[in-house]
Length: 266
Image (cartoon, rainbow, N blue to C red; front, side):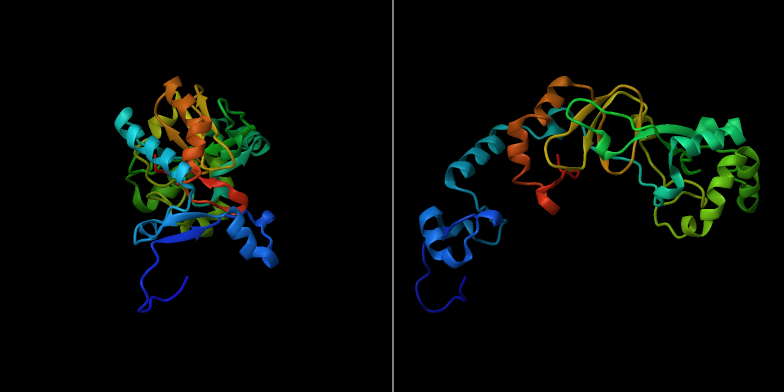
């Protein structure tokens, strides 16, 4: 790359995409000449650069021009999993759940199984016996303490004493969360709680290959996953297909070791 000068601009550039494990730094010029290819300078403008070989570019353009965005095809929008703001407080193993319920059985009604991103495979999910303390914000649910103001904490303690005992030592950290509800022990407001309880598709957010699975058990998910409120098997098959991964690999952000960040861009 050179700073522009008075000389005529070249109409093409030579591009060579080299995986790091194949890079021969002391033989780079020869490698570029042998393995590279010409691209038009028009592809190196202000828009996002496309550094693919022409055949791949043509295929991507064909897919993009003939395909229909998911939000148009199925009138769907992906939804994030639950953001707790402090996983240590709300995401608990089976032994902690057992302890909470043993101390006070009423706590069981606000403990629900949840899936992590890593529990989502291609086609199916595998629950790891993990639980979420489900305390939606008082702005979403009419809790007995919702309108009590300064007396709310006492009511919460009386209603769910064992859950209160689990959360109280974490109060200071819970109060510092950006993601929280009306009171320090509550989760942030969420407009689509009911979507988690219905059959749906689950998508692993940080993935090395397509991981889209059907959940028919009303599982919650943490924010390492995304849900699609549909059970259409064609959509699941399409999202899990090699063609979709080929397309996604060139558009989604890449993270460490070439994992894709399958963020909400469908």
